Image (cartoon, rainbow, N blue to C red; front, side):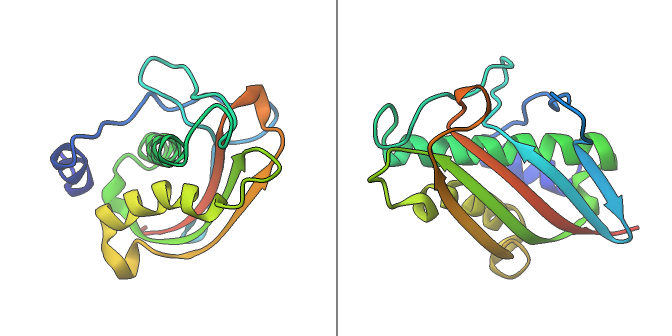
Length: 155
């Protein structure tokens, strides 16, 4: 079991199945020592996405939980593509999208659910990269959150 898998277990978390592409894109692409991960949604262990709009159907806390679940889906793709999450050196960048009401202004707080997961796994230095968090009126299939990310990896 990898060190990151042990940390996930200590946190009481597990990864969903790695999602399959739903269009013409690669879930993950390695370029040099960087892993670019396509936008993922809050995929649960049962294969269903968390749906809804934060500020209407979901509270801030439920949005944060959906963002954490999205981070777990990203990690599932990374583990499938890299063989082990221990190959990840650091988080480089996160772009988070929150499906929300027009007056909801707390998208960064929602995406903290994903960011906190990475801090819990890699610490304050390596687990925090640069980040953008945006609210939007629509995401594919009505999912609540979408996150794409870039990670530095070991060869």
